[in-house]
Length: 172
Image 1 (cartoon, one colour):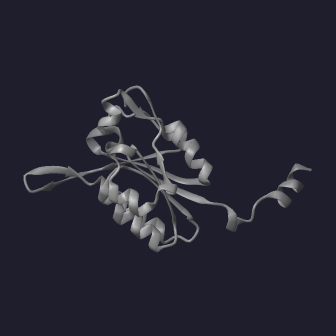
Image 2: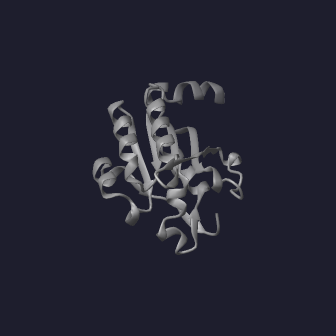
């Protein structure tokens, strides 16, 4: 009986939102408003917020390779960790997290099955990713530490698509 009802009340595939979430972990974890107050990203609550948007097809946590050690296993919550290398830029090493997220958005934006892209970051560099997703008719959802979020990003995405990132007490 339940199977029969599911066939009649299940939304058509075209109405099901399919979400890709891309998390700039270092950007959120090291934001002054988070670490200064002993807060960390609450991955469980974030997942619940993302599921309110639609089916969470991919949840990718981008992190510099030197931060991976000691990071708790997030696979039980459905997150995959993407370890990003560093590159030499002039005299200093910088991670390739931003460019990795931007490239991933470029790839997922081209799939018609994906309807929504959620970016969890405060970084103005995500503007390029947001622009690419919008150009491919994806709905953008931005999560961040609102006082730290780049103004240009807030303006471009629009207030109705921005949410505070869920934080909790603890250590990363």
